[in-house]
Amino acid sequence: MASDSASASGPPLGKYLASTDKKTRDKAIKNLAAFLSDPSRDALPKSEMAKLWKGVFYCFWMSDKPLVQQALASEIADILLAISSLSVSLAFLRGFWESTVKEWNSIDRLRIDKYYMLVRRFVNASFRLLIREGWEAAAIEEYNSILTDRGGPLCPDDTKVPTSLAYHLADIYLEELDKALGKSPVASPLPAPLSTLLAPFLALSARTPTSITLQRIQSALLEPILTAFASRQDSDEPSRKRPRLSTPEFPNLAANACTSDPPKEGSLDPSALRKAVLKQVFDVASEPDTRDANRRKLYAFWKEHIEDEEDSSGSGARSGKRGLDGS
Image 1 (cartoon, rainbow, N blue to C red):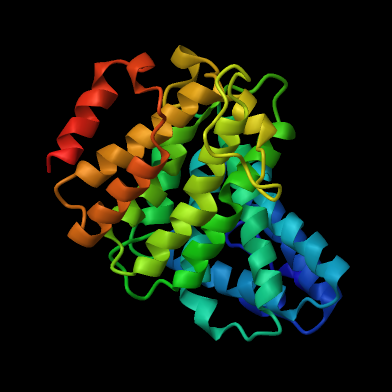
Image 2: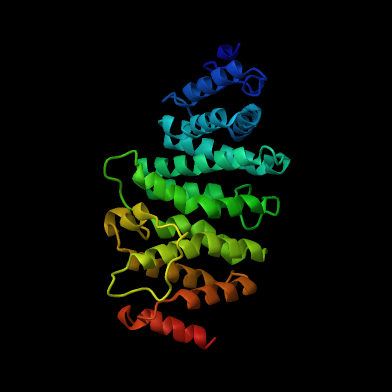
């Protein structure tokens, strides 16, 4: 019986999570949530978490019918918020990403869409968790390390990471962040530290050996946010580039974001956020460990999007551009 699979000493066994019987799987997931949300529970050892996630992965594998899949994806992802200990939540999240990266290439084309959905649910739940924690610096640092460490979906140095996972994350990241801010688990959420949250993608942009990955991050992540912020600037200062009708607007993010220190900075206006993102692109391009080919493309992207009104932004941007033009 699935109810016997969770005990005081261990989580539900994989054989219950991956059972061919839906009722058994459902009970195992509920037992798992209860087991991990026990306030006295410490994070599982890495080996135990890997075994647990292998079971959860195939529990989702066995699910069929769209509504069942959607409900199960939400139920599994929401375990992140059901866990009272932040360290246990983040360990569960790390287990999800390591398992997903490991198993991704085994997913057949008939099942891939539901796993894209599961990834989307976890991205959203991760943001809601960080919002609940007040964007605490150590929590975001650990979150970013989960994404960028070896075995993480945005690790630039791990050739075993499927590139399609990074593409999917770039496609959905800002959309899910905007949704999470719009449905915050706290009444008055602190502004999202946008530069800090974008850092894993910028690091990947600098060091990826795959030009398509860099292009995808620029087109699916950086271009939309810069265009959205430009479209929200004061009508007296219209953007030179008009947003396409299909470009997302990210209204919650534009209204409630800063660069890196939410309590100190408060919400910044879209123009300041746009300048901060462009500066971040320029700074990453300037780092010594950035690949030369990527450096040229990042500089080109920066030059294309830098605002004409540089005289209003101080000498920093002007000197930066002189340095770039003289390089």
